[in-house]
Image (cartoon, rainbow, N blue to C red):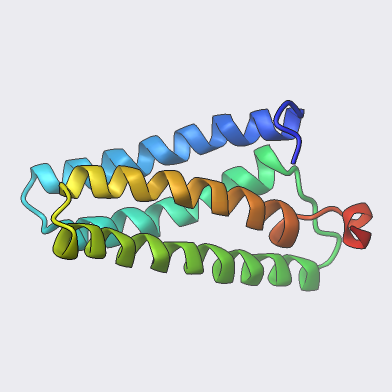
Length: 135
């Protein structure tokens, strides 16, 4: 993983906007009285949808030549981001309920781990370019 590549820099920018959306939605929902576990679930779902489009278009600049490729890409994204979304949801529950961590800190800490996982999974599995398939 090159930390100075243009793609990685685009990922940082897109990741920052996705992270702000996730944290902002979560915090806003908490402030209006939504329970933290429901706020987290809503923020995860909305953010995952946003993340697909920003990663496809801006970060990885992925173009699918067939509908089959597009469906496969969406499915891979759903599986990988679904997995990290499940991790996000249950990690926050664990950190708050078992370890007694602040519901804010638990979410923000978990988001940092999820960001790294999402980059690696997106690059290696979901949006990989044809020339990368022989890696």
